[in-house]
Structures are given as C-alpha cells and as structure tokens.
Image (cartoon, rainbow, N blue to C red; front, side):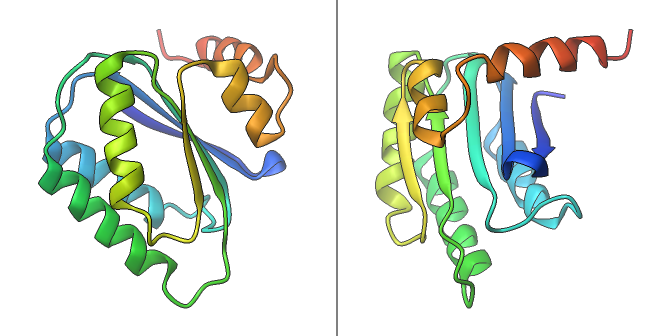
Length: 143
C-alpha cells in the first residue's frame, strides 16, 4: 500500500509513510480514512514520512480539500497535536510547506523537516525511533 498509517498510542503518534506516487483522490481517501480508524485519536501527534515517495506534484485543490477536512475534524476539540513532516526532496518539501500554509487554521503545530533526526527531536522521540520502527515493520511485512 503506497500510504500506510502506523498507530503508536504508547507514544501518542501516528506514522504516515508515503511510498511511490499516488493520485490526489487516493491521497485524500487515505488521509480521510486515517481519521475514521478506531486506533486513531485526534490528539495524536503525526510523523509524515516522504522519504520513499516519488517526487510528484500534488494539486493545490487536493491540499485545500484536505485542509478543509482537517478543520472539520478538529471542530469542537481541544486537541493541539504536533505534525512533523520529513520531506527530503525539494518538491516534497515545497508541497509540504504549501500545505503548512493552507492548513494554518488547524489547531496543530506543523513543521516540515528535511532530516529525520530533526523531526524526531522536535516530537520528543529518541533518535533511533525510526530505525526501530523500520526494523519492526520489515519483520512484520508479508512475504
């Protein structure tokens, strides 16, 4: 699956891993589905990982639609999570910064990083967190 969500309630985190290239409709459906998952809690921090994503553009209309959807999800809550985006390529970094601007009404702190270690430090996670996560997910991957 090109966009996967890994729920880690023990550290109040959802890890969103993007692989390959997905069209806007699949991108939107994936994120809307995250909010419906029983393991998800609106107060969870998020770590969005674009390191394995293929560089492709994301339409501004899809980003605006997601920002509107997120606003609706947060309506009436006191949640104020952190969202760290790992976007090493110029294109993913630029698109992530555009989404950051479009979602400025969401009650979260969203910061885009190029490096994993900076994102983890900002979220208060140990520097080996992603190494352990990647090892765990590889061990549990279907063959």
